[in-house]
Length: 264
Image (cartoon, rainbow, N blue to C red; front, side):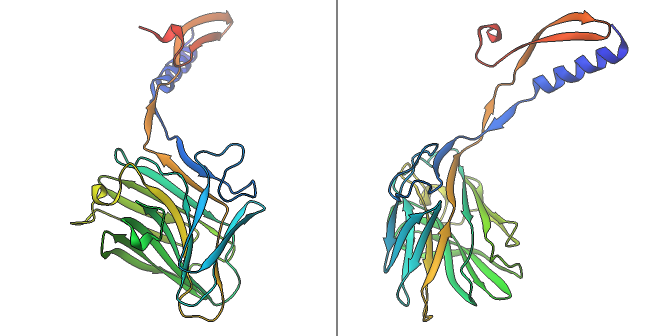
């Protein structure tokens, strides 16, 4: 066996020994079947309900549209199905396709909350974005009977053509990120607003629009909402044999995880 072949095989064994991490969808809705309360093919624990102090919610052409129709009202969507956030943490992803044209978009709230009503009436963690022409501001707020602002910031990035927001939450702390908005926030929990205070085995994911005192209706549009469980190790495939098949060539015999050949 040549030195080159030995190095190649050694590299393959190194790759085979790596432990990958995977996250399973525990909620996924792409709003593709025209029915807000149910999910179509390929969705997981899908379906959203309207939570509002005044507004409408519809689903059409792969987009959920939430509209606050009166001054100083909030309208939103909350997942019909809850998930167990009591152990291990999770990741949530909201995909916003567009923002309606205009100078003031109201305040968008992306929430992880204990109930299916308005987030401010529940135990919740919220990422609030207020986008106006020329820039954006944000706050990370926790609700547990009262509100605590965990972090705030601003950005000059625009987002008329949409953005993605990702939240990673576990017992150690929280993080929100939107590259398109130029917003990054992370931190640890504070007294009375710890992971165990806010999340349990009946946690929901939501999205809201707060119109404020402006004269025109304000909208939040969503392409999809996803919640992923805590990362878990995935057993790699194992090289269990090598067969020479010609000059400087070998065939690797690989056993997939869970197969009989992988048993000790």
